[in-house]
Image (cartoon, rainbow, N blue to C red; front, side, top):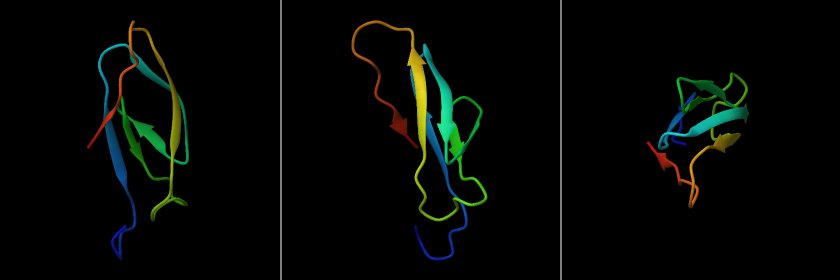
Length: 64
């Protein structure tokens, strides 16, 4: 992260049928927007678990 950065936000875009069921090292706002926790502000990592109710190949997220 650039010097002076004090937080981060990552939004994932998924098709219908995907649900995030658990996240760690971030808070989840909205459907797929992950934001730093107070202790994870500069370059921290996060993870999540989710489910998908579709068929075929599981979707790949788009990061914005």
